[in-house]
Length: 159
Length: 68
Image 1 (tube, chains in turn orange, purple):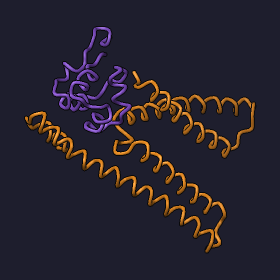
Image 2 (cartoon, chains in turn orange, cyan):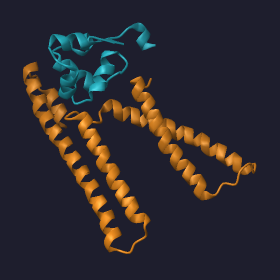
Image 3 (cartoon, rainbow over the protein chains, first blue to last red):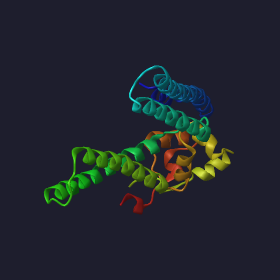
Image 4 (cartoon, rainbow over the protein chains, first blue to last red):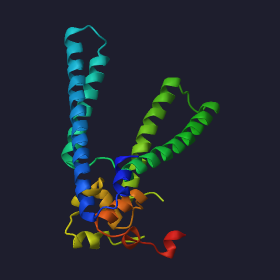
């Protein structure tokens, strides 16, 4: 039994309900703030790891670049979300539902792309290496999922 | 689907952000709900109804065309 089911089972007045909601929201807001803090800290740690590995260890140049890019991306995105959303959650039931639909549509479209790539290879229209094919699919899945999600977010809902 | 969220929210002197904060969703979700462009889960509908001191069937108005 979760906190909401406990709350809804009580035959409390609206006033008490609002007080309960405010108390629970306080906990949720703290959790959101904690999540932001952890993500910001992780971003800084990744960036520092990248800088230190480049400065003190003889490692492949791509590793520090990867770590610094990841850390910077995580830090900037988290800071932006925190600034934009404030105490409100950056995800809710609507955004989760729309993201799930975006991924579903993206998966279906990728299936079509895989079929096309197969026939392109089979008919000898282009020489596709395994690396190139994986690169195309990776880019296409991420891009199409985000495009579909953005489209559904503009629309409001999916029917 | 039509809703009376905007009307009841105004009656309770609540902003969209305040209502969003109370029910734990993004402000945009309240915007789409008020426009009737988003069908909420039963749980969210119940939470909004409780916050606005009403019932779900008074808050959301379904027409025959919505059920087709």
